[in-house]
Image (cartoon, rainbow, N blue to C red; front, top):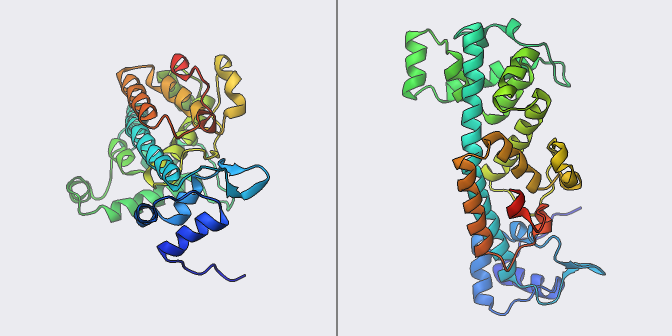
Length: 293
């Protein structure tokens, strides 16, 4: 099957209007929008706004400005989340490094026996994958002062508290998954939860972090990872692949602290600014979301 031909902005506008029933009153402004946001990316915000009897046609009176405002809303919401996600990620790095260094020593990561034997679908150990990835990251960042320092002074050996700062969040998640049961339990205790919950929550936060960092759509996007919820939140189980349950686990991990309060204020401000264009249910939010969060 041949790829679709490239279209000029004017042709894109005609296609959106004639073929998809998208209302466009100001073609000049529509061109400005399409110059800022790729036609393909912008179309993703139209999911849920099509006619039930014709999935190619937008509902009457849906405008290109509406899609653009959804894009802006999504962008601001991701900015709100990534700051808080960063704080959770850094705290988790700290807790893993703190526990492992005190129990096994500063060279904890250099001894494979400190971790459980676990392999991927190709038979490679998760430990070796983490180590290889870390070596590549050290090479990539070799000109940074702290990396140079450890290469020169310690012959390329890095203590665990430095290694975790060089790992991606995904690799940090993998590292947690191969910790001994007692080590997982000790770190989970810090968050006042069980290891099985924390392991799942980390995976969920890695997915959201990657969506935010790589500028992909979060609004009305089904998530791959379903967060484990406590009994009091089981009513939201059917919405587990939406954003709202992610906020429930962020609240637990932050223990409703000042960082959490700051995030709530940011979200309220974002929702207030764009209250005319988005749908709460598309993100799994109940009507009384403020009261719950």
